[in-house]
Length: 419
Image (cartoon, rainbow, N blue to C red):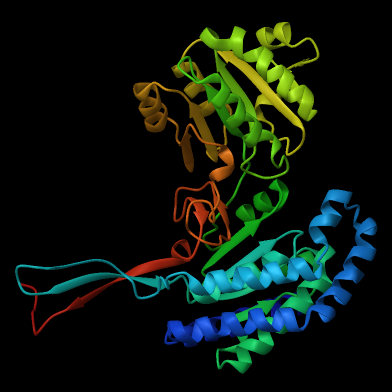
């Protein structure tokens, strides 16, 4: 057995033991840990900032862009926000032990379906170090032990955050291995972890497409995946065009590098002549490059011609594709062919059109007269999230505390035997 295989197995075995201990930990104890950890993060800000500066100094070696370096940087204000996020998680309802349904059978058996933790979560993520604290908070609050594997570019920051989380777990009487950090940048360790079905219950990769494809290919346990966010805004024949413009602007321009940003706008032919000049002016101001169909390019002289590949691309940048469609069904068919089942919105004042879109668009979140940017745990009232799943099993859309649980059936009787 190699060194990496030994390390992976020992880490997973410690997590498994911790997950069993967490099964009997009260909600109050988990809350106490979250508040203690939040206070400790603020108290030890200088320590975190100094380790973070090491990562920021090395960032150019890893080829990070200025935007990526900004996401990596931790300031006292950002550390205070991380601490506040832990307090927010503490305030959320504890899903563990929640009764999903209950009923009695004619023979007197009392049947209950109750939320239970998934067990051991292996969480692989890239870039931002705040995710280290968020993921630890969500997993422990939902009764799971978590093994964290952050990106090498944030290693010093992640270690600093992890030490504080571990110290406070011990201080509040929770199992210290409820949160563990894979502190080696070697990719082989990830491969060894992905073999450990039986010790690790679920793997959640959060990052670029190549990372997720690798994990999905190699994992022996279930994976909660977050593939591309090729999100669409469809401007219907019955749209309020001013509203459509505001929704499109927010969906595309508020933050271009996020998974719930719009990557394609579909416009009904009946409103194209009026909407395209409005869209052209707005995107010119926002410095968004448009790649469009023949009609789009005719109306917007500076637009580029879109290829089939453009409609399949998650740009995460100041680029959007555009297409004029003849009907709502053409829009729905385009989304089915090119979309990624992430987030799609219709802007319309026609109730029947809205209902048709909602019924036939098969995405993790479908919006009516609202920005795609609302597909987010905080915005949808779940509190913090560990990611947005484009899967259908076991969780879909924003994954918060409840999505980090499964359930079991509890049956209470007084001597019944099956006839």
